[in-house]
Amino acid sequence: MAVKGVDILIMVKNSEEEGEFICVGGQRNATFSETNEPIETTHKMSGGFKEFEYGFGEWTVSGDGVYIKNDEGYTTLVNAMRNKEKVKLRVQEEGTSVLEGLALLTSRDLESGFEGEATYAIEFQGSGALEEV
Image (cartoon, rainbow, N blue to C red; front, side, top):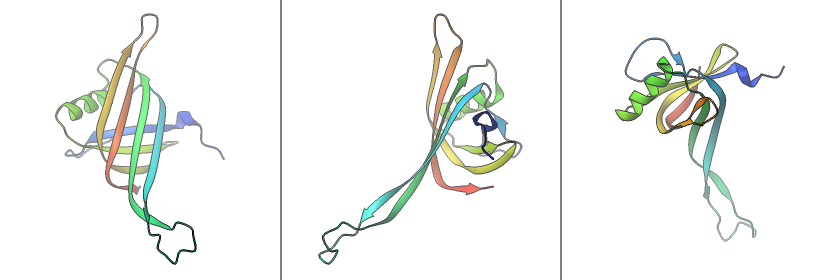
């Protein structure tokens, strides 16, 4: 059965604190990306074609939504970025936690259009391995 996009949420907490994860309020969209950097291992006996092996991997998460003043999740992100602290990030599908890891909030935009709602955009860079929960 297909998972609806509305059922995937970004959850956060301060990486140093115990306790529950907090949903970043007002979410509309979220994108999760994993990549691996290939290492070229081509040699003279490769038969005229390049050969590769897996190198280092990395992951990122980005999202956007409607800005909700004093939202606890959003405030946690603002404070973490300003204090240069990593956050513990969790991706939740249909109410079930599926992925978790430490991340840096690398970008945060707050937009306020003249005739529309205020919105935010956030980008995370994973630090270390991403774990299945």
